[in-house]
Image 1 (tube, rainbow, N blue to C red):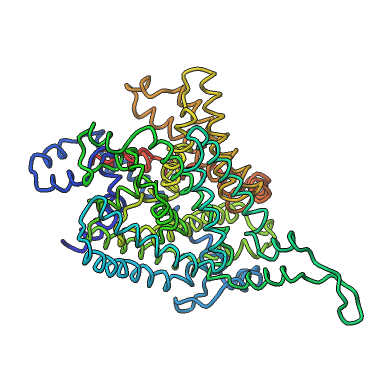
Image 2: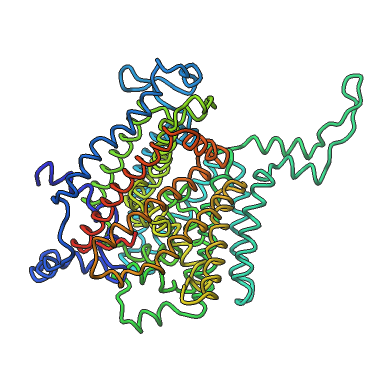
Length: 617
C-alpha cells in the first residue's frame, strides 16, 4: 500500500465507523467473509447513481471559489490575531507560549486547556487499562477458561466492576459515595418497583437528579451537615458570633477529599443517560426474553448485527448490580461518551464485535492525532477564543471580521468536542468495545437542520430516538393533527436536550430555535416534493440549494446563541452586518459562497451513494 493510498484509507468511512458502510441489520462478520468473495465485489461494482459532476465546468468554477474563500476565512481571523492589531493588549493575557516557533497559543477555552493538560495521563490510562484487563483475564482464565457467552461476560464485567470502584474513587474522592448512592437508588427504581411504574419513575428520578445536582452544587457534606446541625453561637475572642457546628466541621473535612475532578456533577449528565438506558432496557426485557428472540430469528449470539445487539434484550439475569455498575462507570466512556446502550454493552461483553480489527484501530488513532494537530495549529494562528474572552469593543470590528470570527469559532468548538469523543472511543476500541462514532461530518458539511443532528453527537441522537422519540410516537406530517403532535414531540426532545446540557435560559432558547428552524425545511419539503421534479433534476438541485443556504444561516445563528455568543452577541452581529452597505454586500457574498459549498455537499453525498454508503445525514 502506497503512502497516498494509506492516507486515503485513514480517511475512509469504514475507518471512522463500520456502521457507516454496513447496514445495521448485517453482521460485520459477513462483510469480513465477503472480502475475498469475487461475486460480492462484482455486486459492489454494479452500484450506480447520477453521473459524477466533479470534473464538470460547473464544479471547476466551484473549486475556484473554494481556493479563494477558505483561505480568506483563516486570513481574516489571523489578521486580527497579530500583535499589530490595536486590540492585542486585551487578547495577550489569554495566550501562552506555543510549541510553534514565534507563535503564542490561545488557551482561553478552559475545557480544551484541561483536556490538553491531562492528555498525557489519559494516554497512559488508555495503555494501562487494557493491559491491566489482559492481566486480569490471564488469572481469571487460569481458574475458568472462557471464550464467549456468559463466561466471557462474567470475566469482563467483574473487571469493569472492580475498576469502576477504583476509577471513581480516584476521580471524585469522597464524592464517589454520592455517585454510588444515586446509582443504587436508580437501580432500585428499575428492579423493585412494579413494571408499569418503571418508565415514569425512571424519568422522574433522573430529571430530578439533573436539577438537584445543579441546584445543590454537588451536595457538599458541609452543606448537608448544616441542615442537620446548624451553626451555633459561640464566643470567639471578645465577640459572640456564629461558628460551625462539630458536624459541619466534619463535613468540611470530608469535602477536602476531592479526588482529581472536584465538580463530579458537571460530568454526571452523561451517566444519567446510561442510567435511563439500563432501566428502560430492563423494562422492555420483561416483555421480550433474549433467548426467545434469538431462537425465533435463529441468530448466533456471537455474530449479531448492530441492530440486533441494541434491540434484542439482554437476559433478565444480566441486569445485575455488578453489570449495572460496570456499564454505568465503564472507564473509557464514563467522562464524555460516546453513549452505548446497556443491551449493546452486554452483547459485546459476551462476544467481541467483529468490527474491532487492529489495522482499523491503528488508522483511527492516526486520524485522532491528525485532528489534534489541526486543532493545535489553528490555536497558534487564530486567536478566536481569546478575542471573545477579552470582551473587546465589538463595534471596532467590521461586519466581515465579526461574522467570520463567529463562523470559525463554531469550528473550534466542534474540534474541542470531537477530540475527547475520539480519544475515549479509541480507548474503548483498544479495550474491546465498539461504541458509535459521535461526529460523522465536519460542522461545515451540513445543510439540513434535521439531518445535522444525525451527524452531530450521533450516539446521543440515537439514544434520543430509542428512549424518547420512538416511545412518544415518532413524527408524521400526513395531516395537521399529526404535524402538531410531531412539533410537540420535537419541542419536548430539544427541551430535554437543552436542560441536559446545562440548566440555562440561553440553551433553552437554543433548543426552541432548533425546532423553529426545522419548520421551514418541513414546509418546503411538503411544497416541493422530489417526485414532482424528476424530469428537472438540475432545477430541483438549485432550488434545494437556495433553501439550504437559509438553513445553514439559521443553524449558524442557533448554535452561536447556544454555545458561543448568546442572544445579545447574535444581535450585535446582525446589527453590524445590516447597518451599512458593506455589511449587506458581505452577506450577499457569503450566501454565494454557501451556495457553492452546499453544491459540493450535495455531490459528496451522491459520491457516497455511488460507493454504496448511505449515511442519511
